[in-house]
Amino acid sequence: MTSITRAVMHLIIANVLFFILAVFIPVIQDKAALYYFENPEFHWWQLFSHLFMHGSVPHLFFNMFALYSFGAPLERYFGSNRFILFYFACGLGAGLLHLGVNYYEFHKVADVLYAHDYTKEQLIAAFAEGRISYPSTLTGEDVQQMYEAYMTRAVGASGAVYGILVAFGMLFPDAELMLMFLPIPIKAKYFIPILIALDLFSGVTGFSIFGSNIAHFAHVGGALIGFILMKYWQKNLFNNRRLY
Image (cartoon, rainbow, N blue to C red):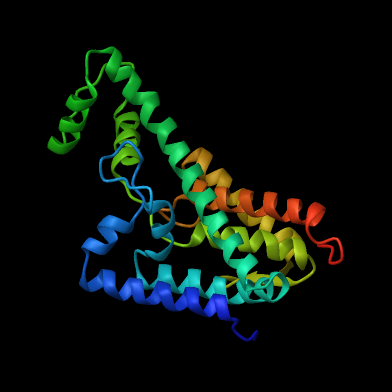
């Protein structure tokens, strides 16, 4: 079992404290969760604050366990300051891709409704009332996806954690990992790409392998930024300390 490092410890403490505070003061999560950017509840700081919000104890536990397990080796390699930069960059990338996908899901339906004489104000009012009439070119599932893209908020550190997983896999490709419900060791260079591919599959098809209410594209966004940063640092920053 790896020993904890300074930045990882501080991140875990902050996540636990914010989770406890949000349980007793729900408005904290209302303001810190990530809303769709055309929703009036959206604020710029949510791109970072949502990383400290979690929906349940298991959600918090698994993210913090992954942060401890894979983040500590990275912090030892990068140093605390670069690790913190990496963590928040991956979390930001996760939030931005999640919002981008929500923009697509919202507007592919909303633009049809706008063409049928809905205004944005009328659409928001219809959301509040829970009743939306729509033309035959749309389905109830289309409208439900639009509604969820606009109204559903995102919480959790998973996007940043996925970036950490990618970096870990690039640094320690032969480390053996396993899922709790599948106790078969698989090398990181295979395990992590498979995990990301499953998230991408779930995000594209809507068939969630890991359960419901998961922001799959946030995971993919964090992984993508983690990969880009690692390739950049590999090429430009660690001339005397190459990453493999």
